[in-house]
Amino acid sequence: MKDPYEILGVSKNATDDEIKTAYRNIAKKYHPDNYQNNPLADLAEEKMREVNAAYDEIMDKRRNPKKSSYEQNYNYSGSQEFNDIRQLIRTGRIDDAQTLLDGVPIEKRSGEWFFLNGTVLYRRGWFEEAYTSFNTAVNMNPENPEYRAALNQIIRQRNGAGYRTYSNQSADDCCNICSALMCANMCCRCMG
Amino acid sequence: MFGYVLIDKPQLRICEYDAYTSVYCGLCKNIRKNYGILYTSTLNYDFTFLALLGFAITQKDCSFEKKHCVCNPFKSCGYCKCDEQIMDMTSAAAMMMVYYKLLDNINDTSFFKKMLLRILKPFVKRPFKKASKRYPQMAEYFKEQIDISNINEKDPSCSIDKAADPTAKLLSYLFTSLSDNAVEKRVLDRLGYCMGRWIYLMDAVDDYEEDKKQNSFNPLILAGKSIEDCQDVQSVLNINVSEAANCLDLLEFKRFKDIIYNIVCLGMPKTQNKVFSKYRKDEEIEGSI
View 1 (cartoon, rainbow over the protein chains, first blue to last red):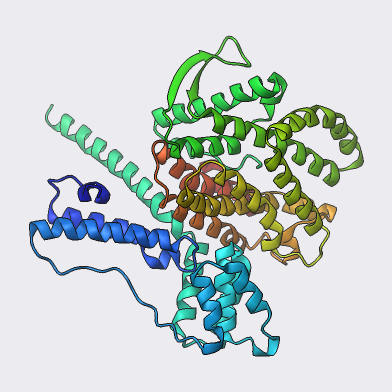
View 2: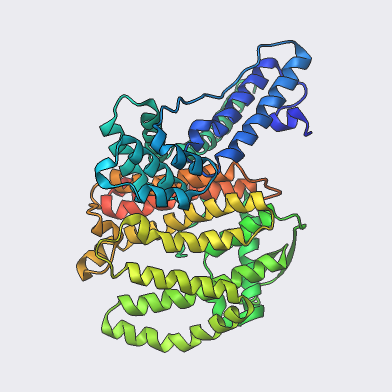
C-alpha cells in the first residue's frame, strides 16, 4: 500500500485543512461525473477508491472523522427491454450493444434508446453523434435525471472542462510567483 | 499527424524545454541512422510527442548527452537516450505518415502542384518501404485506415465522427504500441483516439476555406458547420482535448509529466486558438501568441 500522504500529494506535517483541500482537488479530477459514459470509468473509480482510502487513513490516525464519500448513485430507471443493452455496456461489450440498438425498429426508439445509443457512441469516441443522441433523449424525456446528467457532462467536456482546470491552475501559479516577486521587490526598497 | 501537437513554450520551465528539444533531436538522429539524412527534414513535433509519451511511461532509464547536431556540425544538441525501441517505432511511423500525406496532397491539389509532388514520390517511398519491412503490422494497419479514409471522402453523407475515425484509430494504434501493460494500453487507446480525432478535425478547420473554394471533401462543410460560428466548431474540438486530459490523469508518469500536461492542456488549446484566429480575423488574439 502506497504512502497515503504521497497519494494526496501532501507532506506528513500538512494541516487538516491542507489535507482536505488536497483531497478535494484530487477528488474533483476522478469524480465519476468526469468519466460518465467513459470506457475508462473503472480506472478512475479505482483511483477514487485509492484517494478515499488514503484520506480516511490519514484522518483516522489524527482523529475519527465521518467517512466522506464523493460517490453518487444514479437511479437507473431503465425499462426491461433495454436491460440487456445496459448489461453489455457495463461489461464493455460496446459493439454488441450497438448491434442490439441498431436492431430496434425506428418506431420503438424511445428516449432511453437515444440515451443508450449516446452512451455507446461516447464510449467509441464518436462525440458529435453522442451529443446529438443525448440531446434527443433529453428532448423526449426532459424530466429524466440520468439523460440530463449525460447531456450536461458532454456539454461540460465540449466547453473544455477536462483541461481548463489545468490551464487556470498554471496561470494562477504564474500570477502568484509574479505577485510574490513584486511584493519582495517593494519590501527591499522600503527597507533601503 | 500534421504539426499541431505543440508545447506552450512560455509556460514550460527551461529544463523542461531542453528535455523536450532533446527528444526531438534524439528522434532526428534516429531517422538519420535508419533512413538517411534527407528524411530528417520531414520530422515534426507531433512525432516528438509520441516518443515523449513513450519515454514518460517506460520503466527504462532516461539519459541526456550533448553532441554535434546531425544536420549542422557547427551546432551542439542535447540528445535524449531512452528506449531505443520506442524511437525506432516512432521514426518508422513518421516515414509511413510522410508517404501517405504526400499521396493525399497529390490527390487534393492542382495539376501543376500534382506534377511537382509526383517527382517527390519515389524519394518518399524508399523510407516508407524500409519502415514497412521493419514494422509490417503497423504498415498494414496504416493502409487499412487510409483506405477507409479514402472511401469516406467519397461518401456525401459521411459524418464528422466517421470521417475522423481512421486517423483517430491510427493514433490509438501507435499509442497502445508504447506499452505492454494491459491497463496502460486501455488508457493509451483512448488518449490516442481523442488526440487523433483532434488532429484530424484541426486539419479540417485549417483547410476549411480552401476546401470550400475547391469543393474538396471537408467533414465540417458536409455537416453544415459554419466556420464563422467559432463557438460551435470549437466545441467539436474542445471535447477531444477534455477527454485526452482525463486520460492523462489515469497514467502513471515516470518522468516528463509536466511537459505532457503542458502539450495537451495548454499547447493544444493554444494551437486551436491560433488556427481559429484566422477566421475570427481578431488582431488582438494573433498578437498575443
